[in-house]
Image (cartoon, rainbow, N blue to C red; front, side):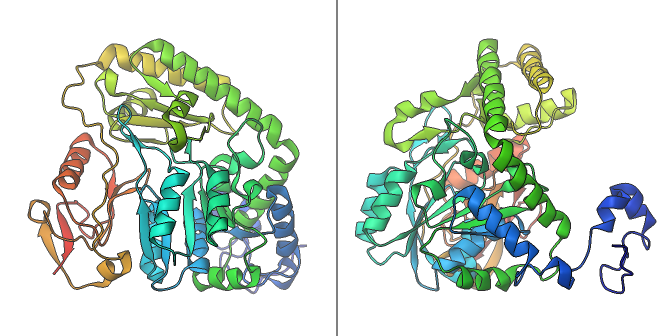
Amino acid sequence: MRVVPFDVPGHKRGRGNPELADFLGEQCVSVDVNSMKPLDNLCHPVSVIKRAEELAADAFGAAAAFLMIGGTTSAVQSMLLTVCKHGDEIILPRNVHRSVLNALVLCGAKPVYVNPEVNPELGIPLGVRPAQVEAAILTHPNAKAVLVNNPTYYGVCSDLPAIVQLAHRYGLLVLADEAHGTHFYFGDNLPPAAMHVGADMAAVSMHKSGGSLTQSSFLLLGPGINPGYCRQIINLTQTTSASYLLLSSLDISRRKLALEGRQIFAKVSQLAEYARAEINAIGDYWAFGPELLAEGGSVAAFDGTKLSVNTLNVGLAGIEVYDLLRDEYDIQIEFGDLGNILAYISIGDRQRDIERLVSALAEIRRRFKRDKGGLLTQEYIEPQVLLTPQQAFYAPKESLPLAETLGRISSEFVMCYPPGIPIVAPGEQITPEILAYISYAKEKGSSLTGPEDAKIERLNVII
């Protein structure tokens, strides 16, 4: 409408910062606007944002939906803060994203960990069995909720429908971290989506497989959650200056998936299956998939769009293959850990991109293959929890060299990012396995984050 702006942002539709306008484009900066009355307000939507949230709820089969512009981290934390208060117990697997444990630091809830089983060949944590969840509920009858990864970063899904039924029978809420499961709502022959099987809340990364801008996500609610109270929780930490670029990208992407999602993700699935077959034909690599269902109840479903590849038989750690793909072949994959890589296939991929990745992996095997002796496979270390994350994070602490922390209680996180699953979290005892893992991950070039000490040579422990 060419309204004359005497509000923020100060670049005034890009005129005040032409370098920014040249870089992002005039149309982009022209719609980077403030929460003026005609454009509604994310903190208390009554018009266009409210309508966008209603359309999102309808598209995902939820009772309510919130546009989230702090990433799925914000959605996960709002989910936990809505159902847990200080001292409450929540049942969850330990291989959760750091955002879950950060939420426990904020609210003071107590984690009750259900340790996932581990595939010894891949070294990755699998899902949790319903029987394990029931045992945790019986041992902790006052727990408020169960949190489930749906799926894990590697595509593994627990038996979410059975866990929902089980938890509801005992009066617990079910929360789903669906950071990597947006497409479950819009595809055929994919694992079940949380809202479709009766979960109470789900955090969905629309920017990962749904095509919206980075940092934009949805928080979905079932009928048993008070949306007004949840909005209050969200507003405790969410910015009052919401980016309309992120909000618009959520609305546009929601519309595309609602109209074309089934065709889109049928193509994504086909590309992933083709890539899996071609990579397995190279030799030594294991692009694993539905065969993991043989693990039984710990793997109830597998997300076939996830191209996860074990690299150990090539004699290379996953992070080494990650670096080679980037440095030698100009291919950027999602992550490499100690034994696996993940190439994220989604809405924007093409056949020729898959061919280039397969060719590069074949070349890497030919050029760099070596004996796999000495490679570490274990990707999950069962935690020794002595304090809650909040107690440990805020406790008096001292900084020690890593080698001197053995047996002490950590007051901070250490994790490889991605995937962002803590190796050690506040309140957990530092064991020889943890120290060996950190040392090995550093040696192989993993990106370690979490501690105050950026070089990860020292760690804060409780006095």
